[in-house]
Length: 607
Ligand code: AGP
Image (cartoon, rainbow, N blue to C red; front, side, top):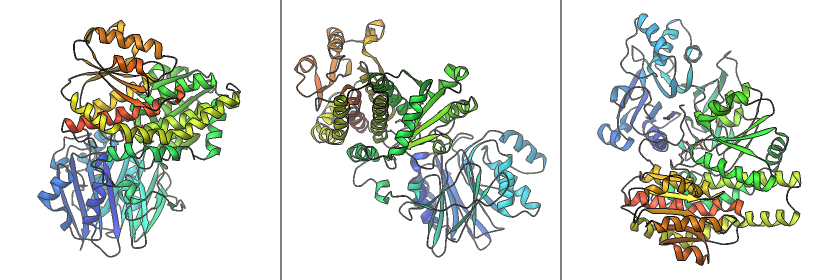
């Protein structure tokens, strides 16, 4: 949940580039920051607690001399965000420095061993053991890469590390296990980072580093070796067709708003995915004895919606499961006939990846849907589909959610076709509607954004919201709730509307805001009575309805219209967009930073 960045430059000074790279990784963690450069046989270090801009203002991070350096922006897991715990961490002689993203589970026993051997520790972090472990091995005459490799073998847990040393001042050595790490190559430089956007403005020539690999970066080159046997691994760089702008805000005040507006474009991308992988995944789903749809947070809401899609289109019963509960709930029943479709935009969420691990141990088939090529999920899944949403920088998932829904609905439709569960007419109609989705979302943003903005102003002071829907719309309601909670910090409750009278309705009093997601589908009749139940007790009804739905309009205090005529299984895609905007504008009303919500990080790589 931290961001690491490093560079070896042929000509220019490293420090300003490191700061800029860390700035592009700040969404991964922002409670402390630090940089170290190597120059004239000395390490130059600056680090402190606080966001990059604050620490830079205080210490001027750019005046560290040298063409080689690494940096870190932190999301504390071990040791509170004090200066001493900020990265980089050094060895006893301050001759080498390490930055790290991940968690070293056995750092306690390693630290005890090193203290026993006379090492002095300066921080409370797990990371510092790495610096002293490498120091130990360098004393035995190993090269920096060999020493880092030997140290990595001792580490249990997750890590992406970068190391610089006075012994070999012109290179950076990195290693990874579970935590993400990528290398970027340019004519006069080489970069390492937790994520591609960090160096995208500098190069789109990327070398993906696999789990259990070590990388030696020097002079615009990189060499990969296996940590297990230190053997060389040949690997060609890939050209990533992401433009630097894709990683910048393009004039929007926040990444989140930019990414909400990007949805039409990204949804078009989902309609052009590689046929063979979609078909292969459909084949695996068709053969499956039982299917689990597993994920966390927003991705879980996509799984929930998908369970309605698979059932309604392909008559396939699936189990949507929250990843952190999977092993407890289903771990023992998973077997060789089980298929686990894992959904994760980052492809790095620890809870989700742990379900993959336990399922693979029971010979289940693991399929993956992700947004990040080269992520861990792409390496552990039997087949994966990359949803092509481009980098999502805002911590709150938006474009990746609607893209997940589009891909999952395509899989359900393919399976329905394969099993002959839908007529040709239905198939054509659904495919036609899928093609129209990008425009429909475009229309909603164009016509409804200002109205949503006004609604956020109107409901600004409300201290709690309900989000209700029936059928597949309950998934959209749950996503609307999560967005409002995570970026505007307003306690909110979501559940299938039929549950109201079994308890939650007791909270309703005059003016209590209840958001209903109610497209004109098979649930329309029943949700009208749920609205009336709430209205009878004084609730303020805010409804997301199809154009011209006069019945619910008449019952609503406020409503947001989405274009009519979309098949039920596709309705969560347009229906969630006004809810994303509502949460965004409510966050602005409440003076919150929608891109960096407190207590959260973009990719949750700890369990
Ligand atoms: C959603 O806005 C949150 N950022 C969070 O709930 C997220 O969906 C969850 O952590 C799963 O992330 P993933 O899709 O990268 O696995």
